[in-house]
Each structure stands twice: as structure tokens, then as C-alpha cells.
Amino acid sequence: MGKLLVVGSVALDSVTTPFGEVVEAVGGSATFFCIAASYFTDVQLVAVVGEDFSPEHLTALQRDRVDLNGLERRPGRTFRWRGEYSYTLNEAKTLDTQLNVLETFRPTVPESYRTPSQLFLANIDPDLQLMVLDQVQRPSVVALDTMNFWIEGKIEALRKVLKEADILIINDGEAQALGNNRNLVQVSRIIRSWGPQTLIIKRGEYGVAMFHGDAVFALPAYPLEHLKDPTGAGDAFAGGFMGFLASAPALDDQSLRQAVVYGSVMASFAVQSFSVDRLASLTDEDVKERYMDFNRLITFQV
Ligand code: AMP
Image (cartoon, rainbow, N blue to C red):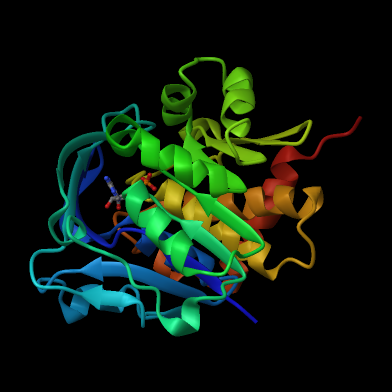
């Protein structure tokens, strides 16, 4: 049986929020995704790091259910991202993006990864997302994430990826930029006409909305009294969402809704600390408990 495969960035992030800062902490879209998904299923990672990615950095990714055979180490420096959040925690302000080893990275999918059950193309250059798609047998679910950096710089490659995708998971601002429209219902119709049948729009502290067929499912974010750093919330969401789907008996409306809740559970843990500290140290009970909290949060009598 194939496994959940992800390609994305592994990064050293420097982040400032109103609650503190970190310098060159482990991050990256694939990192948050793998850790979140590993609470549900086995994950295979395709990514690249540089020579400066130390054994201590690597420990964040060394988990029983994460296969690192596809993590390449190349001469040069690891991808770096520097961002800042104001009290409006919904939008990261990118201060600096250094692609470094990502600039010349040409992903090679190991032989043992080529028949995945599901594929997640995490936020990374859409040309690299396409290269991975070309090397694998098409799985039952292909999902992707992207960001303004690529919507502005690589729209043609991104449209090609979208054509091949079943699910797009994207921030509200980015969805509006991609669909060139402010109304999210109209945006969902426009973007879904380009390929993905399902569109999931992440709305930060306002939660998430899933457009699927004629249905819309909306969920608030978990009400947290203290949060530290929103970085990685989107990727942790995707990891919980895809990880749950990979372990679900069917790919129906019910499972998709439950997957949105598990995604939101993992995102809520990610924002409780800088880097992956909280996300990487959960128990299965922590995850289940918060899932049940969500159930109480949205249940009402009609
Ligand atoms: P999010 O889940 O949306 O908060 O994603 C945050 C992660 O995205 C950070 O850990 C960054 O390292 C990573 N990231 C930022 N910019 C890029 C980019 N242009 N390509 C790939 N990954 C990025």
C-alpha cells in the first residue's frame, strides 16, 4: 500500500511576533506538514536542506512515522524565511526569502515513494511541484498549497499544477489574489473551474471554509487564550487534514468534514509555540481531546 507523500520546503525560520522571536528555528512547509500528519499515518518526505542543517535541526523531523529517505542534503545553505506578525496575527509580513539550495533543487522521488496513496504538494516552487507529479503514479488524492510569492512569480506553472489537483488548500488573501476577486464564494467557483473539485480556504483566527460540490462547510478556529506564533498553522492544518484522510475508510463528505476538524486541531497546536515545539510533542490523547472540544464548540440544537 502506498503512503502519504509530501514535497515542500524544510527551512530555517526567523520569526518575530508580539509575543517573542526565534532566530533560525526549524520550519518550512513540509516540516510542519510531516509532523502534523505523523499523528495519523506514515509520511514520506521529498525535500532538500543545505550543509548547515545540523543534526539538532534534523531531530525535529526524526519521527517513527516520517520516512526521510527523500530528504536530500546539498552543498550550500538551507532555505531561509524571515517573517513578522503584528497584533493582526492573520497575515505574515515576509521580510526576507532566501531560496539557497531550493534555487537549484530538482526533486528526485525515491523508487519506494513512486506509488503514493495520497500526494501533498506543500508550498514550494510550482515547477518543483510539477516535477514530483511527473515522477509518481497518480494517487487517489492530489492536494496542494501555495502562496503569494508563487502566485505573483509563477502563475503559469501554478495553473498547470491546479489542473492536476483534487484539492487546493490556501489562505483567504491568496485565494482572492489567485481568483482576482474579493468574494470567496465567487473565488471558489472560479478556482474550482481550473481543476480542483475541493477548495479549502484558511482564514486564520476566523477558521476555515471548505467548498466541495454544492456544499460549504465552515469551522471557527479553536478559541485559544494565548498564542505565540502563527507560522506553520496552514501546513499543520494540511498535515492533519491529509493525514486523517489517508487513514479514513472513505473519501466522502463526512470524512472531508472530519478531516477539516483534525486539520484545525493540528493548526491550533502549531500556533501555541514558536517553531514546531508544541506540535511535535503531543500525545494522541491531546489530539483526540481537542477534536472533541471542537465537537462541543459547533454542536447546537435545532
Ligand atoms: P504557513 O503554514 O503558511 O504559516 O507557512 C509557513 C512556512 O512556509 C514557514 O515555515 C516558511 O519556512 C515556509 N515558506 C515561506 N515562504 C516560502 C516559499 N516561498 N516557499 C516555500 N516555503 C516557504
